[in-house]
Image (cartoon, rainbow, N blue to C red; front, side, top):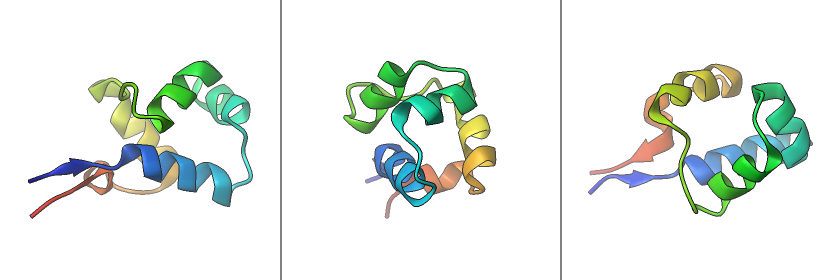
Length: 68
């Protein structure tokens, strides 16, 4: 089974780079509320936004998922 771990990746990235949710949102042009919802897994980023996140976080879109 594949699990979505984008919430952890975003939070880890923010903490490593000492960014608040407001600052992270400003970098991406989104609201801090959206960042908060992603981190609390209330919702996920739109699929078309995943490459933008991956580029910023210097990872692959595949890194947002783990599975067997």
